[in-house]
Amino acid sequence: MNINIYDSIKYLLLVHITLFCSLNTEFDMLQIAQIKENKEAVISGLIRRNFKEADRAINSLLILDDQRKAIQQKNDSALAEANILAKQIGQLMGQGKKDEAEEVKKKTAAFKIESKQLGEALKKIEDELQQLLYTIPNVPNPKVPAGNSDEDNEVLSTHGEVPDLYDGAKPHWNLIEKYDIIDFELGNKITGAGFPVYKGKGAKLQRALVNFFLDEATEAGYNEVQPPILINQASGIATGQLPDKEGQMYHATEDDYYLIPTAEVPITNMYRGEILKEEELPKKHAGFTPCFRREAGSWGAHVRGLNRLHQFDKVEIVQIQHPDKSYEALDDMSSYIQSLLKKLELPYRVLLLCGGDLGFTSAITYDMEVFSAAQEKWLEVSSVSNFETYQANRLKLRYKGADKRPQLLHTLNGSALALPRIVAAILENNQTAEGIKIPKVLVPYCGFEWIN
Image 1 (cartoon, rainbow, N blue to C red):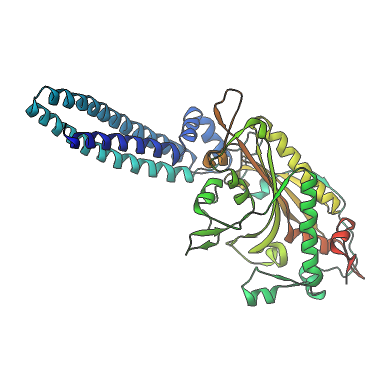
Image 2 (image 1 turned 135 degrees about the vertical axis):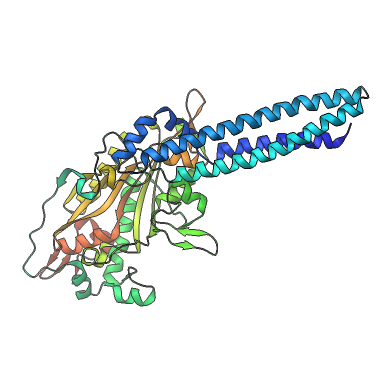
């Protein structure tokens, strides 16, 4: 038997297996199948979130997938022919018909060339599919209203009373200078704009808030973790931060790592590629990290002081949930975050984001905004979102139910809470002629009642 014949057949089989595995791990077959089954609903939903390229993107995606299938079928046919020829070669060699066997060898070599060409074409289609999928956001839940911007968000409820400040009350950027608790100029000297230095009671207030939020999360059943603040590319892709569509992420190019925009990213990626048992659900985690955002855009009066920073601290809560229970979990997370604002005695309101203001990966998002009395404006301090299967599909995060068939899970996250605007509201809303009074719930954590 000529060993080269077996090498040829092994090569063809290896190509087939490699391509099959690639197609089932590198781009989202399930997502494409779901899109095909619900094409009109998907397009309608994407239009509702103001995704202008919805029709073109979905139709292009399905055309590419049809091309992929055609190439795959052609490759399968070539492999089937190669298998038949492989059997013929063995039979002919056994019968001493070497000349005929040589002719079959030539055909096998032709199939080898054809398979290689088909493999290259298939890889090209696969790459185009993946890149196109990266540009398509999550389809919003039917509850999400249509709209183009934050002006179209729905106010669901308002809580608490706006304080009546004394004459001479000042915005927080004047207060932090007066009491020397946060230094923007020093941060600018060390790093640049948007990287403040917290000092004295300002630093202690930060630490008090972090500890308070983590203790409350533990009490609510969240398991505390301390994840890395740098992630690799695979993690960023899995939760939808990459490809970075708005240039928001800091990139450590030497090692190809990214600074996290939120603890959601590393915490959710703890489960990338996992198949969980149904009885293990839900997974609930809380984590404190610094967060980094380049925040491309203007730096006018509306983002002065603590209103927008490049680096800030945040406690994040994350849930990995059974699909049947994720919306109940979303309501629980919203109520939990609101309980923190009530304990801090901050007036707040709850918004349902419209399609045009929805995050790229989110199916539905509720924002919590506190009222900053001296600025006389609402400041977003938390977003709580259900991503349904969008992230889980990228993460390949599944569970096995009673039928033992792996199914996609739902992922959720919420800010609980982001510190800068909470601090701004605490400083402004609690200022008096004698100083700034610390909310009662924070006094045991701070070790002082006043900033003066």
